[in-house]
Length: 260
Image (cartoon, rainbow, N blue to C red; front, side):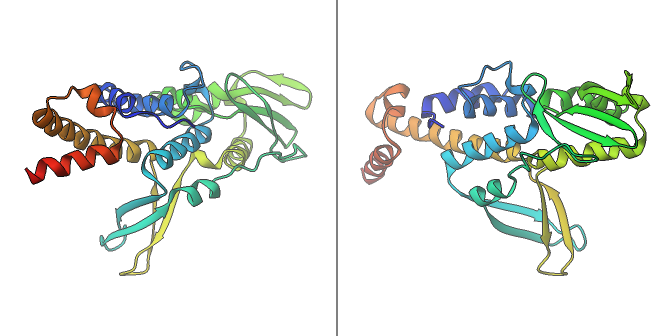
């Protein structure tokens, strides 16, 4: 991944100020994957997007992530460090799974995604790994689970007879599909399970890397704009001239300003 320059990152931040969380996540994904057409990004498997955002976070801000959450049992504040690289590697998929009876498999799917295959109770089902666009659309439906199933179902055959409606799938088969998707794309659901040092109870919490990264980018952008203001005031340089300086040289000039 090419490291994006300060001017480009500021442009991403500025564009994201007017967006909701979904739009900001897409902007960050575009920054992480400039090699991919923007229209393709929302249909990539969710786990692939999460991996891309972890890679962007590591490239911009390093490996160490500080995480803070409250214990669900006693309410105590818990703070700990997370190694972004190690955590991202732990989310590696179960790629190469064979599609034996009752087992998941992967293969070419719809736009941007792979397909898992489930065989159970006479059913032979192919299901596309959901992308962000699928989750967003399903969340607006009265029954998000059913809507997601309908959007991503590729084919369903029972005893050699093709079934069109996703609603015809029995609950055990739907559950098996969910298990197969989780096995192939574990990074789609990034969950922490932290033991409280005060009471010992475990707290489960989702790690939303898009929101986490946006918060860091927002703080970085505001600090950088303050630096630009101070240097422009002291030296009369333009914003592009200041952003063209390396972070080390900007810091050095700021120290000189403070000494005056």
